[in-house]
Image (cartoon, rainbow, N blue to C red; front, top):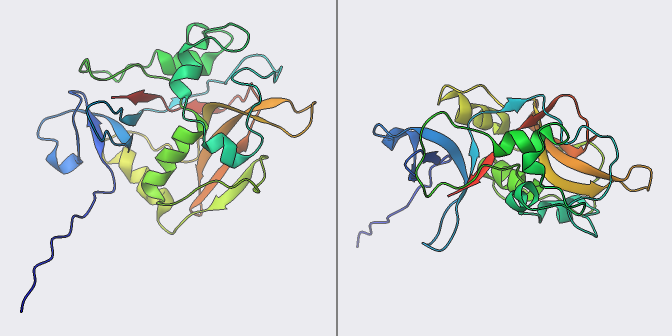
Length: 238
């Protein structure tokens, strides 16, 4: 007997196109890529998620070094709890605990404002939603596109630290951007909308970030509100 096996090889990177469809770069067929799919849409009622192809440099989370609790109480206290936060659009557009809609505050909350006002440079389909500052969990979904099965743990430090990824990780991330003629995001402090408790009252509540680091490492943890070299990678639902 001879058997024929059908094997579906999943492409490593799917792009979101401006018409609201998704696919590989090879089957773009004139469609304009505007994002990398980090969560596929599985049904009509489901929402997919994508990150922008542009990194917006030098926008801090907040221009005030107060480190107060803003999103939810209690806040995440470890990296696993932070990675469970998928509410970036909510933190961007709904009022925080102080009653402030951060998407509207260009001076106090530059990171939120810039993400919310991102424009991919081409008209987009009505099925593509509002751009927003992603949560830490959504940034981890992005990491998982290139490092399957990676999950932050409850025991790793919340302070800046390195998680080792597989060989080729940083190259795969870089190629996903450069093959669509966009600058690499590698080496950038990509801040999330998620806060984490710094461990002491004086540390307070701090933004979490990821950084695609050399040596196939993910540099991650918490940072200052006013991080001068913070970068924004806007996300969108579709």
